[in-house]
Length: 157
Image (cartoon, rainbow, N blue to C red; front, side, top):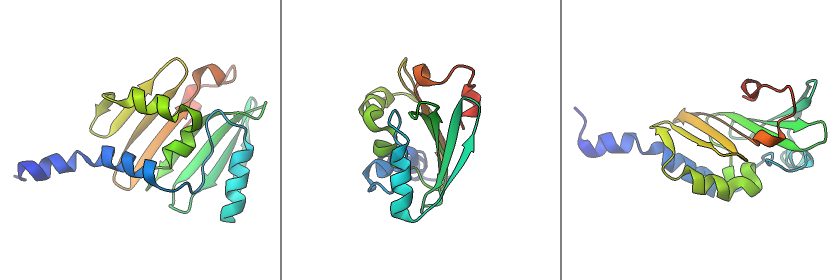
């Protein structure tokens, strides 16, 4: 049986990983609630490419980060990022990804862990869902009032 301190450390990695993601320098990220041009600039600086998929009511722009994480931004037809989602071995920089909603997320996330590997914040103006374990993170954040009519939240992953 593992020692009590080793057991506790095993379940403390998510807050540590989230804190680390917040402190990393901004590499590339779409910014929630901002115009889609932000990801174009990041991709150019990284000499990366963006895969764009057109849907009926929105566009999906996927950027492969140098860390191996795929970051998708969901852009309304008016050009505003209404959702972001990611998956990969590392968390994206949440301060950059959530932009003006970051402080709202941090305040609401205190005490909102739904398990050892999950964080969920659900507010009228912002929903953030993060899960994962070491080297395998997934998450999404969206602005419920900005999601285009007819778009299923289940499609934002």
